[in-house]
Amino acid sequence: MTAKRIVISTYGSLGDLYPYLAIGNVLANNGHQVTIAGGVSLQKKVEELGLAFAPLRPNLDLSDRVTMKSAMDLRTGSETLARKLIFPYIRQNYEDLTLAVQKADLLINHSYCFAGPIVSEKTGIPWISCNLSPNNFWSPYDAPVIPMFPWMVHLPGLGPGPNRLLMQAVRLVTHQWCKPIYQFRKELGLPTPKHPLMEGQHSPHKVLALFSSLMARKQSDWPANACVTGFPFFKEEQELPPEVEHFIQQGEPPIVVALGSSVVLNAEAVYKCCQDVITDMGKRAIFVGAEHTLNEEAKAKYAHHEHILLAPYLPYASIFHKSSLVIHHGGIGTTMEALRAGKPMLIVPHSFDQPDNALRIERLGVGTYLYSAHFTKKRLKKTLCLLLYDSAYAAAAQRAAEVVRAEDGAATASEYIESFVQQV
Image (cartoon, rainbow, N blue to C red; front, top):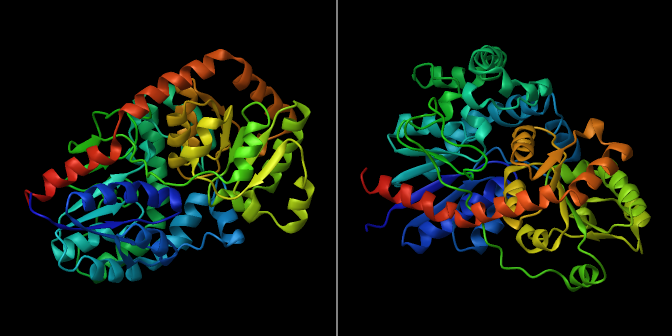
């Protein structure tokens, strides 16, 4: 097999980076030259793995609490991400990605890297598009939950006709968001594209659906060249800190609260509610990431707490399987790790793909969800009792884990990539 030069673009949090690191590692091990293009905050993690890195603007500052809180708002988060954090920087994104793909044989493009299709059209480089979550396929036969319209959680049962009409309304609203892209393409002499947030994000060559078949199966209106690969799990070789292992050994398996690298910055209210309810129930919990994100005053409230441990960021693969239940935000990476661990889960969705992932988890019977606006002590306690004491959830979680563990998303995706790049 001829070695190829492959650029993988990404944008977002660590959950957006890790699946591409997993794929990049497989491709590199197979002899290909792999470059990860992303925000400079990701550079250290990429280069530690021996992969090449190319800076790609805009760089999302995950430590900016104000911005992250706005981006994680249920109704306005998607608009904030598109209109304030991505689309205004389409020129810089294009310039950086054009530089990154010089002499490359293939571009593998993240769905939020909107310069990818433009770079392909201008340079002629072939590209493969990737989608980490089912909601990006916008199928009325498998209707996604739209964060800015949370009542749309009830849509899937209405059928393709009503779903199609409501998606058309979403198309009209978001069309206004995309004006910077339309204007930039006009400046470059390119035709008006398909809707960048909908069908325009998909490559005409190959589309990789980088999630488990449990989350969604290919629908008749998906791109014909789309393939469900399974989720590409990134293997972090990291042991749990001694104090975490010690806490786990001191009693029954704890509840693990893991709100992700972006949501966790504004998670104090969720933490407080969890602390009160879990303590009242006589349960134990580990708050992953809280040690680094809570201020000193907040951390003091948990100091020397018998049932609560504030932990640094921990590899989910190492901690989830030692838990009794996982409370998380519903990001696709965290969701897939909880599925692989075979644990029931409670999802507290905020924005983006999280509400849709939460509904799919509920359909599988492995968990349920509470929006943050409904996250009260009474509802939380009722939900935790249901998930912990109804054996159907644990049984469903174990069945789901068997399916997820049998899938090898990184290897399958890499096989599709190598098959394609050898033909171009």
